[in-house]
Length: 359
Image (cartoon, rainbow, N blue to C red; front, top):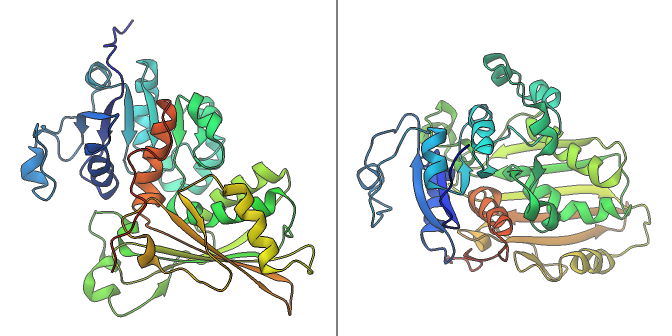
């Protein structure tokens, strides 16, 4: 039996010094309804936050602490887990036992079965002896503009990856309504280097990636299965996509271009824009651009917004969907806080930036 403090909306950030954790802390530091009461980390435990991150000074200058479940439960009601794939699953069951509600930014609970996760994250699975298949089945895949009620009632929310966020939000309305064919869907996406995380990696060195654009994970990228799972869930049909990510020499930003064939080739771009606008008309985090205006990643930098543009190629009846997000905000920490807002009974957009800094 764990005695809980009844103070509301206290948040622990575990993995606070990574890119995801830093963004979450920056956003929550100015949030009107949440207070960050615990900063956790493994490699950074016992370090002073203001010395570790002088660019993001905190008034209370917390000490990063090892993620002890009892201590976290004593100090927080919610936990944002900004940890590498595999680590979250070792902490989540213990936190749930102690009554915390969790938003997980890793991939540990994005799949609806442990078998699926183990297939696509085989290296992580080999190092762990996970037995939490029930939690995988119970976790809610958190797309705030799509399944708001489920998120509101959830104890565990799995945040989508940045590529799935940019690809799924504009595509789901058309798949759900059966307006596009299930075969031949292609998603071509390009992301900034921050998507690779903060740990040093050779291919992300300036000398390696500057003045160049390069594809990776051309066949079998993990996000392919994540996107397919969600599309199959909302359509009730088997769907296979072709997904190719590319690395672009910029720090943040993600552009996704999706190609799919319309079931009714007589539909125009304006018709398709009307469809998606009707689905998202009351969501200020989603903006549908006029036909013929195509988005730039710079238009959404530092915001929790996705811009979507619709076009139709009348020669072949193909729908072309373009979308842009800030991969660290809408594609990661901002979406996590949207989910956190809903779990706390708040408006999902509360405390999140929607206006870009331009240029």
